[in-house]
Image 1: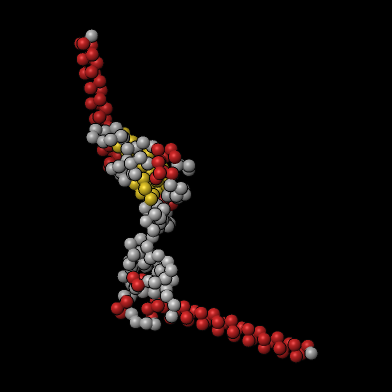
Image 2: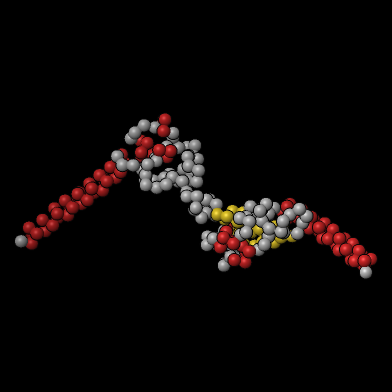
Amino acid sequence: MKIIKGITAYFGNIYESVTTISMGMWITFKTAFFERKVTLQYPSHDIIDGGSKDASLPSKKNLKPPFEPLLGASQQIYKGPLNTELSKRYRGLLGYDELKCISCLLCAQDCPIDVIRVKGVKIEGRKGKAPTTFRIDYSKCMFCGFCVEVCPTDAVFFTRRFEGATFEYRTLIREFISPELYLERLQLAEVAKQKAKVKKVQRQKSEEKEQ
């Protein structure tokens, strides 16, 4: 009886191995040739704008079935369950519009982990303060959105960009104000201070004359 049970178990294991491998191979074959594609060829496919950004991918014109489903070319006709583009409400890396910024410091004050650093100066012809420093540390940002919500001029906003991988930590700390613009703003601020002092002196003299 032990010999018969051993032989039965031996051939049973062979049958189970053959059936499971065959089932797996059939699922792979069916998915590759007959079912719609569910994989976007990232990073060859531009997730944000759609379309291919990799010239090495063969075009659909030069590729005929069954090779097209296997190589995943021509993502323009993708019919899978995924969306080929990011949602407009997607919370990507923070963006910054320097022209709208008034250096009110609300974004920096509301940030729970000190991701943003802002400095500004008063110059002529500019509402509020002109920014001289605006720094975002993407390595610490947790995309909470507090800075976006509190900004009164929509100068801080979420972009749809998510590609932040880098080999250099320093590249995750971005300075939005160039050194040239920083120096220019300081000079303009000094000019504005001098003009304000002159106006103050003239006002005091006029008040003294009236008295």
